[in-house]
Length: 239
Image (cartoon, rainbow, N blue to C red; front, side, top):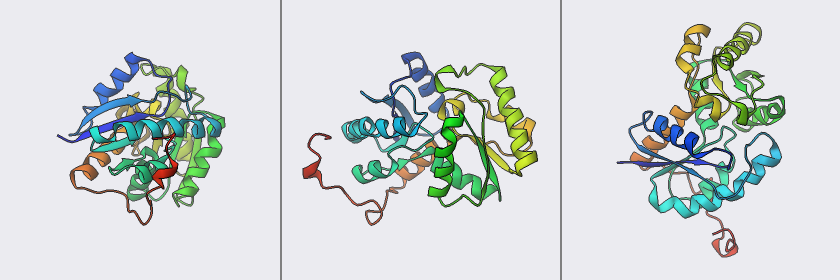
């Protein structure tokens, strides 16, 4: 069985929510998924400061658990630490945003996503540029949902995502959409939102976990030309 770590680079989720995500994740892929969180880091990742802060703890934990897993998914849509984690690890490392962006670009000419807060808009635009898809990304809109306030059973949140999604389609020309937050992804309301909007509404959690499982099964890892190994003799405190 392919073992996948879903690494949450923060400390804000309680045990009940981590267990809920693990149950959901194991229904998404043929691999076996274990939700792992870090020992230190921010409660949530809603700013550039928190994103930078979380990478240190994520690297330490990833190195610690690597031998127990065949692949790793970063449990944050910002893909924090994607490059250093690929440099450090010998197993596949998958970022949900990168996976979802390129999937959206394959099934549509123009796509967009729903992020959580106005404060995350600059980081979202930066991601589109980083992945070379800024011309295809025509819409990034917020649903005003701080991570710690997200209620996965909230119909009001779903209605808000639908309303904002409709604007992205009608006013911005988006032909595919997705939630730009893993807490929104784990609400698991994609099908009803997609049925209402009439365009693909992708699930970043499902796509990232499936990609990690496929890569692990087929021995696909990051190129050392692109992600060279670090100088381990300088990483004593980290490792």
